[in-house]
Every structure is written in C-alpha cells, then in structure tokens.
Amino acid sequence: MPNECDVLIIGAGPAGLMLGCWLARLGVKARIIDERPAKITRGHADGVQCRTIEIFQSFGMAERIQKEGNELSEVVFYNPDKHGNLVPTSRIPDTQPDTSRFRHVVLNQGRIEDFLIDCMNADGLKVERSISPVSLEFADDAMAGRPIAVKLAHLVPAVDGSDPASGLYRSNIISNEPGLPSSVSKTEEINVKYVVGCDGARSWTRKQLGFSLEGDSANIYWGVMDARPITNLPDVRVKVVLHSADAGSLLIVPRERNLVRFYIQMGTLQPGEKLDAKTQSAEKIIESARRILAPYTLECPEIEWWSVYEIGQRICKTVSFKNRVFLAGDAFHTHSPKAGQGMNVSMMDSYNLGWKLAAAVKGTANPSILETYGAERVEVARQLIEFDHKFSRLFSGKPAVAESEGISMEEFQAMWVRMEKWTSGTGVKYAPSLIVADTSPAKRDLAQNIIIGSHFESQMVLCYADAHATQFADRLVSNGRWRLIIFAGNVANPDQLQRVADLCDRLTHDVESPIKKYTPPNADLNSVIEVLTLTSSPRRALPYSAFPELTRPLVGKFRYPTYDQIFSDEVSYLDGGGAAYAGYGVDPTGPGCVVLVRPDQYVADVLEFSRCVESLALFFDAFMMMGGAL
Ligand code: FAD
Image (cartoon, rainbow, N blue to C red; front, side, top):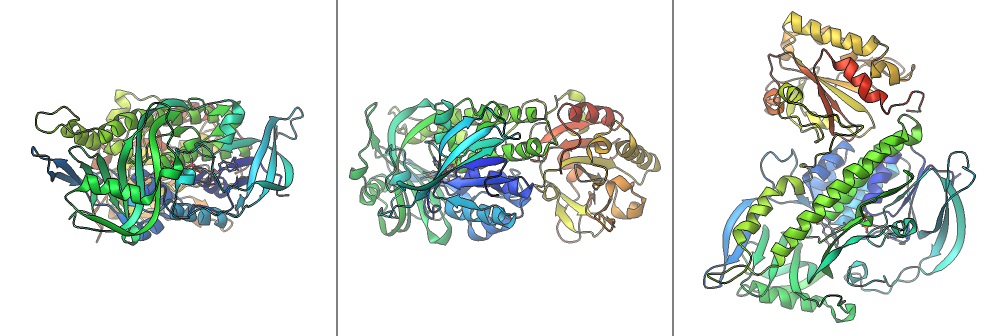
C-alpha cells in the first residue's frame, strides 16, 4: 500500500532528495512529495563543495558531477588601485591544497537533483509531485507505532505562464509564489512514524510546528544571472571577486556549458522596504554589472536564468518536535548564496539525519540517537549564519581606496582563505555526544591527524589482495554500516601480528563485543560494524590468508571471502601512496590503534587495542538495540 510508510519527506529539493537517497538505500519505507509539478531546471545553486562530492562518491555518483561540472582552479581578486582603476591584486587556488581528494565544482542545481533522483529511483523511491500537506496531527491512537496523521492534497497543476528564464518566483523578494497549482483533485490521510520538512525557506512544516526563522536583513539587494557573456575582462573563465571603487561588487563563477554565473550588487533598501518584483529585469542587472566592471565591457546576448535577492541571514534554532518531526535545509537556515553554501549545507543536514532515522525506524538504534541531529546541525547552521553575516557585509562594502574610509580588501581576502576549509564542508566538527566520544591527549597521540568529531579524511592506500591503489575513504560507502579501522602497524613483526589477532579474537567472540552483540545471528560478520585494516608493513611481508578472519570475513549465501577490507600503506605501481600512516599521524612502528567511524564517515572515537572492546561496548550499549532489522 503506497500510504503505508514510515517516513514522509515533504519537499524534493536538495535536502529532501538526499534524505530520500539515504532512506531508499537503507530500505526504509518512505514517501517523498513535492507541491511543484516539476523540478527546477535552470539557475539556483551551482557550487558543489568538496565534502558534498565526497558524499556523492559514497553513493557512487561523484563521477557524474565531475564529468558534467566545471572544476574551478583559481580565484582572482580585482580591487581599485589608488586612482580607483580596477586591477587584479592577487590570485589563489580555488580549492586549497589538502582540503579533500575532490575539488570544488560548479554545476546547475537541477542536474545535482537529477543525480539524486536517479540514485533514489534505483533504490525504488520516486518523487510524488503536485502533492502538498494540508494538516499534521499527532493521532490519539498510535496507529501501530505511526503516531503522526498527515492529510495530503493531490493538486491539479495550473498552467505556469511565467518566463522560465526568470527565477523571481523563488526569490526572497516576493512573498507569494505565482503559478503554483491551485485546485485539489483528491485528498488522502496517511499515518507515519516520522515527518521531515525539507520544504525550503517558506517551510509549511516549520509553520505547523509554530517555529519561526529569526534574523535580520542587510537591506542590500543583488542580482544573479547565468549568461554566455562577451567581455574583454581577461579572467572571465576563472572565479573573479571584484570590488569597484564606488559602483558596487561582483562575483563571477565560470560554469559548465560555457555559462558564466554573475552575482551583481544592485542597490540598497530602506529598513522594511520590499522590492517590487515587477520593476526587476535582466537588463537592469546587466546595467549594474557594466557600471561595476567599467572600463571592461559586457554584452549578454544569451541569458539562461536571472533573479534578484535580498541579503539576510535567518535561522530557526529548534529543528525537531517530539523527536518525530524534523526540519532540514533552507527550512531552518537561509542566507546569501555567494559563498555557495545553501544547497550543500542543506544536503549535509539530511545526510546527517538519514542514517539515524533509518536506524530508529528499523529498530537497530534507540530513537534517542535522533537528538544528536539537532545538536549537530543547528550548530553548523549557527556557524554558517555567523560566517555569512560577516562575509556578505564585507562583500557588499565599499573598499578603502587610498585614504578613504571603507572595507579592507586584505581583511576580506584573509577571511576568504581562513574560511576555505569550513566552506568546503570538510572543516565541520561535531561536539562530543552519544555518538561522538570525548577526545583526550592520549587519544590524540595514537593518531595525531585523526580528529574525533571530524570526517575521516582520505589517503591513498594499496588493496592487499589485488594491489589496486585506492582512496581509503572510498571504502566508506553509504550503506549504514559503522566502521572499525584497525591501524595494524607492522604485522611482519610476529608480536604485533599476535596483538592484532588477539584484538580480532576478542571483537569476534567476547560477549560484550558490539560486533558479537549487535550482528544478528545469521547476518554477515561485517553487516553492522565493518572492519577495515591498514598495515604499515608491505603486502609481501605477510600472506593474505594469515590475517584473522574478522578482517577478511566470509560473506553471503556461498560464504565468499572478502578481498577488499585489508590495505597496506605502500607506494603503488602507478598511483603514488605510501604516506597514509604519516598522513593520519599514526606511528607505523608503534602498537597501532583503532578508529571508530560512523555511517556518515565522521570519526566517533580513537582507541588503543588494549581497552578497545570495553570502550566499544560502553559506546554502543548507550544507543544500539538488538533484534532490529538490517
Ligand atoms: P529547496 O531547494 O527550496 O527545496 C524545497 C522543496 O520543497 C521545493 O522543491 C518546493 O517545491 C518544495 N515545497 C515547498 N513547500 C512545499 C509544500 N508545502 N508541500 C510540498 N512541497 C513543498 N547553494 C549552494 O550550496 N551553492 C550555491 O552555489 C548556491 N547558489 C545559489 C544561487 C541562487 C541564486 C539561489 C537562489 C540559491 C543558491 N543556493 C546555493 C542556495 C540553494 O539553492 C538552497 O539553499 C537549496 O536549494 C536549499 O535546498 P532545500 O532542499 O532545503 O530547499
């Protein structure tokens, strides 16, 4: 029955679709609805940050972004010289070295949504369009554990007469979206366990909960357009951050298909003043761009999409109700788009929520795990709002030229570089909680560059069985499993090999071991907590068959041995490598350590061999449940 589902996702933008991918992948009965008859095809977000691509990789679809998107290499800053003339003052890499194994890419939000939809469809979940919720209530009768009653209206799509090149209909300068379906063909009532409002900045779900966005507006408005420009600005195919002496600022982002995204400062507003959408046009945006770029010229014979937006930062600090209804994405944080954060952070929200929700629905974890969602993501949203508040005001400010008052361009550029890791998404760090252990100097000594609460970074390693060079983090696919990464050290040394064997023996057989306790009796040994092993000794030092069975378990109906869970830190024939222990800060000749990684690739703990089983037991017993469905 289509209306028998456990999770209802309201809204199929980036946040809703990412959640749909997770839930479908993990076999959760979910529905995802959207009031619009079709997804967006033009405009909106285009910056895909490194951490987002890492997550797409974990779902097996990063290649599609890399193939179609435009990878950015350089940022050039144009500022006025002491005579007020625009000159390039510095050039920096767009992605700072060591940020990620991936680089920042730009690609239309519509294509990102396509990839998510394909991924979700492959796992059997489809977006149901022209449906919007009418009411949300907690049923008196708990309806077989599905306590939330939602009434849905099936809508008849109205003919949308708006200009497809205009994005004003979803801009924040107007409060009502024209062209939305207006008549209802039928209604239905469903009962669900969980509802997630991924329904954007004007979230219906947020309003049902009585929550509101708080924040302010900078009273500045900007235009945005995707065009194929003709210009004599020499740097139009790299990212340009430009402050003119007194005509405003501009950001240029070269895109796929020879498009260029322009963000153009247009003007100021009186407090409380709203822009009249009817007075906005692509021509006005181009006029402003010409004033800022002068003496460089600009013609835009082909404009694919344009819009106008007002700068503001707003946040809703409560994102869950009774641990049953959640908000994700723009539904709880909105800000200006120039730092390329909204779509990325929105997807990161639901990526954080998805595996926890699946574990709660399937009964493998106590629903209390869901409390960590708000704690982790509201803090990220708070940092985002704080960053954007400073960043957008520095971006819109008049630069200090010669003796005049204004924004220091050095300060602006320093902030840009300082925040790069954070804006790439790789700098996010979650605080200690039920699923992130406390850190300590002793833990830091075990693995100096592995930070508890941060995502597990990648290093090139060599697959023990087939000598393929592999990015280690590529093994952390999104399949809901926890990972124990054993830094086994030099297993050519018999004493060290014995220590690894003893550890694996205890992890396999001790009654308190979470692998023993939470892996269902007939399931594969790696199906709840998967063990990955990295040796510092080379492959030839020890035959594959000499490793303990836990590190190369037999899986599936025919008990096939796995060949992709053991790796060595040595130089590959063609693709480098041999620096993983150094990169992770683990002593290659030392006693080794164990790193516990969450299903979303965040490091939950770093442990020494000797206390590993006891510590893991304490950690998992706090929230794991036996007898859930895998
Ligand atoms: P949305 O994308 O708004 O999706 C919400 C969905 O919910 C929509 O499909 C909507 O139809 C549906 N919905 C709403 N109400 C209901 C309802 N009552 N019932 C059913 N369905 C409903 N972000 C970046 O990361 N990088 C960028 O480079 C970037 N550039 C941007 C440039 C511009 C010009 C703009 C406007 C935005 C940009 N953003 C960028 C921000 C980004 O587009 C948003 O942050 C992102 O789309 C938020 O995703 P979401 O899924 O939370 O919400």
